[in-house]
Image 1: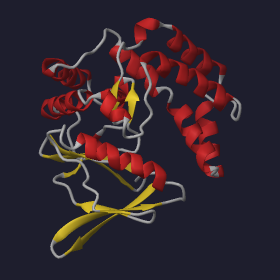
Image 2: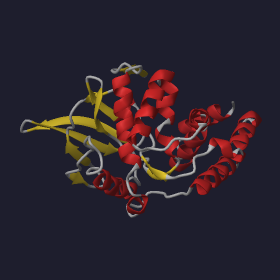
Image 3: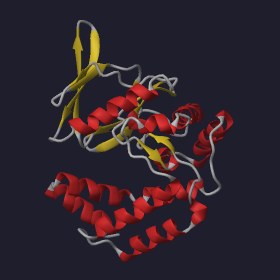
Image 4: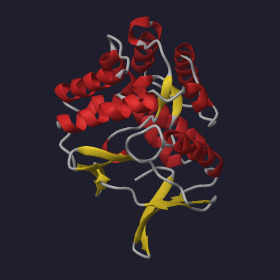
Length: 264
């Protein structure tokens, strides 16, 4: 279901394998960064991540991980295989995010992921808005919303952490209601902790999100007063991120879809 890779499940000598096949050229260099991220986080997390055994420009392969996806796409529609209101899943998510965000950011920087301080995160968003506005028409209401968000200190965290960037049921394998593995680390970077809270906040009931946040804090994580509001604003930037992807790929269909999202 990924934009960059086609994923196939295979079996050899009784061992299940995941095969990731690039959909376009130019993905091998970023995959080198992803591999280093996997090697860094594997010993830090209480659940496994992919252990790449084959890594070439044409193929990435690793042994099948325990559990099954919490979300799949069938006939273009998302199908949840987890009760998104589950407090067990919420607490499992809180444990995972605490462990990930506790990874030393200096060590994370050596993997080659983007590294931004809290101030640099905001500056990067401002630059992104200007870049996208140079190639697309953005609704005035969206620009006004994003600039108000960027200008208001109360929305923003005071720390940067190592983030996955897209932690939600499609990228978490589950057994029952507990997370058993985490997939697809292509979007990892050091920056805004809310990158790992926002998608879950957008799909989980308030009680589940707060159970996750409470578990995260109990373990030692830090949250800030406007975390939930910040998550809402962060999710509103999805059209910007898609527009950047459309520019990167040069695909006219992606460009048309991105423009539709920026129309407000």
